[in-house]
Image 1: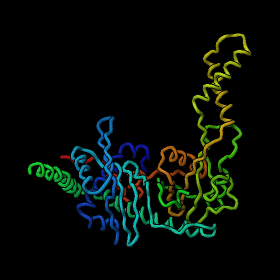
Image 2 (image 1 turned 135 degrees about the horizontal axis):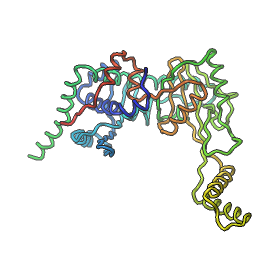
Image 3 (image 1 turned 90 degrees about the horizontal axis):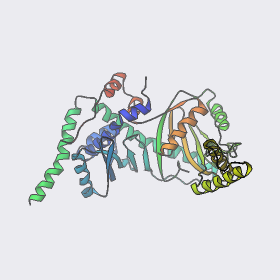
Image 4 (image 1 turned 135 degrees about the vertical axis):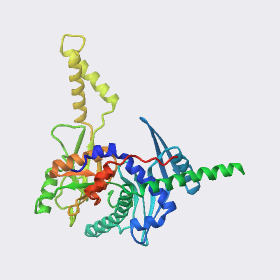
Length: 185
Length: 203
C-alpha cells in the first residue's frame, strides 16, 4: 500500500536533500553517470544558485550561495559541517534545447522553470498548438529529473551506495585540503 | 497564464484512479459543477473553485476549450478577502456602541463580544471585494499526471481538496518517497528504501 504523502514527507524528507547533494557531486565529478541516468544527449550542470540546510534539532541553518564556481566552494564548506543541499538551480541541455529550473529537495517542487521559447498565442486557434508544445517541453524536462531521481534511488538502496558516500566525503573534504594548502603558502 | 509563461513553478501529483467514461463529458460536468462562485450567497473569507484557462475571471466554461487530448487544461481560482485589522476594530467599536445603546447594560458579556465581532466581520465581508489568485492546472488523464503551476503550500492544499471534491479522485503529491514509489520501483526496492536511514557526508 502506498505511503501517506504527509508521513513520507516527514519521515523521508531527507531523501530529496540527499538526492540534490548527490546530484551536485555527480555533475561535478562523474558527468558520465549523469548522462547514463538522464539519457543520451542530456547535459545537467549546477547553475548559479545553491541553498544548503543544516538541521540541528528543531532549528534549521540555511545558507544560500549565488554565483559562479568560486562562490560554490562555500557550499562545500557547509557540506563539511553537515549541511545538505535543500534547493539547487540546474541547467539542463536536452539535445540542442536549453532548460533551467530550481529544484527543491523537500518535495521535489520545481520553480523558475525555463523551457525553450514557444510560439506566442495570438488567436484562440493557436492555443492547442501552444498547449501541446509547452506540455511536451515540460514532460521532457521532468523526464530527465525523474530519470536522475530513479537512478539515485536505485543507487541509494544498492551495495554501491557506501562506496558513493565515501567518494562524496572525499570530494567534500578535498576543498578543505585545498583551503589549508592555500593558507600554508 | 502560468502554464504558458516563460518562467513558472510546478508541483506535481499522481492521480489515483480514473475518470468514468466518457472522460471528457465527465470532466466537463464535474468542472462546471465546481466552478468558482462569483457571488457566494454567504460572504466568505476564501472561495475556491475552477475556471477556464482562457477566461479565469469568468466562472463559465462555455465557449472555452479545456480538452487537448490527453491533456485537460483549466485553472483553480482562489478568491480571498483580507479584512484590515484596523477596519475590523472600527466596525467592532461601532457595532458594540449600537448594541449597548439598544440595551440597558454598560458592558457586553464575552459571548456578546464574540457575536459583535462576527457581525462586524460579516458586515465587512459583504462589502470588501475578493482578490482573485489564479493557478493553472494541467492534467494528463491518460498518464495520471497532474501539475499545479504553483509551489505555494496553501494553493497545493486547496488543489488537493478541490480536486477530490470535484472528481472523487485523490491527487497524491510527488514528494521524494511517493515519487520513488511511482517511478517504477519494484515492491522489494520500495521496501528497501523504506528501511533506509539518512547518510552522513561530513567526516
